[in-house]
Length: 510
Image (cartoon, rainbow, N blue to C red; front, side, top):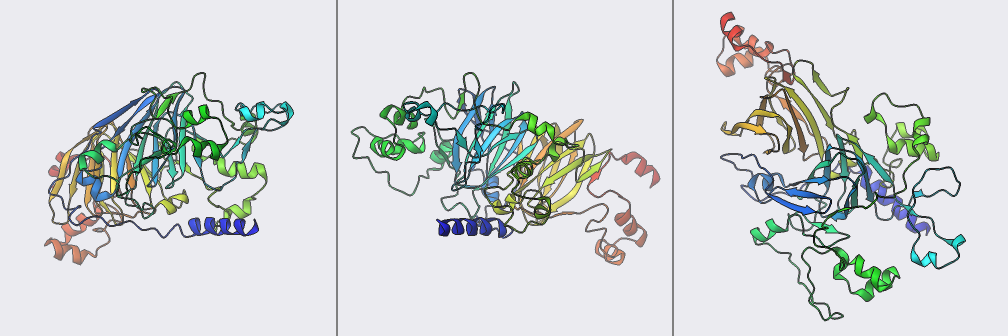
């Protein structure tokens, strides 16, 4: 047992301690050679009882270049996104709504248990039939891994192979946008997004595109010998492929339970998202306990993981202040951070807009995933100056409003020059220069980045590449008089966001 614990600790330290070193699998040759970029819309919808899932075609060249896949999920009131795990790391952005979610890390303990004392407002599950048949005093308390609360604007990190579920307990629909990093080194299957469902009998989200591409798994399907009927693998959950005898032996439950486990009694319309009659009953922290601590000045500053550790007395403030990869193991790692509209953005111009980023410095688990994200808002006619990302592809999701966007490649060709509208997705390859000008009152966007610590270089404005060149170099490179070279360097005092610009007044001054 001691050896097992030691190995577990070593694994946790290795995972998070080495998280800054991540690699991505290289794409096929010419996948990022574009004559023209195209904004993409979702082209497939899978309806379920409690909502629906929309997907973008991962076979499009832009997504193939970035090595990612994209989907959008809508959960209605009391809708449960059934547990699943994926072959690639996931970043999930909550565009709208709030509720609960959970991640199941293999080997980590069940830290949420129904307390024995009365007066604690925990909601418990029914005890299993096995314990109901025994002495009531011996009935087992429900326990599980941590349940997290999510709110609009949260970014949730889900590692490869870690089971995930989500539930909407509010009247407002929950809308999430999910990026699957299929080029991650953690994905050792093919470059195709896969969902391994743990419950139900539903269609694979990306199966349609796999069939269109003509690619099938490189393993042979074996007909089961213990059953006389043919096995339908497409759309079933992971347990449906196992024989009933195996599952009865593994779970030590009756045949009826196994049939439900395998999804044999499913209605066709239930799908991946089911409606929970009367609401989901789960263990969650007592609201009175949370309200007894000093409230944070902003909602997104509340760190539920830190709060839980303080309440359990396992970590003190001094140890948490100096993380070295041991204090935060995978079992206690934070998995979400608020990225939405904030009173404390990283970049803010009251006349132009704001930008907030979340990378591995804000959410260390992103270092393991090799991903990050940004959320930005531009006001009408304001501009995000021409810039490029040094070490990552950028997947821009237009959340609200619209903007005129231009993208330029290494040959100086304008490969995109259109209006990016709400619901559109645009992939901007690494080092391609991009600029955007808002065409609506508020243009709001999400930008996934394929590196855990991306670097952005602005080409115009204060502290830009042009601004940091010697005046003599600027004058001779662009064949400009010294005065015009000085203006080129110094006329724009803004770093990233430029307020609306009056071209007429500039011509009059000239």
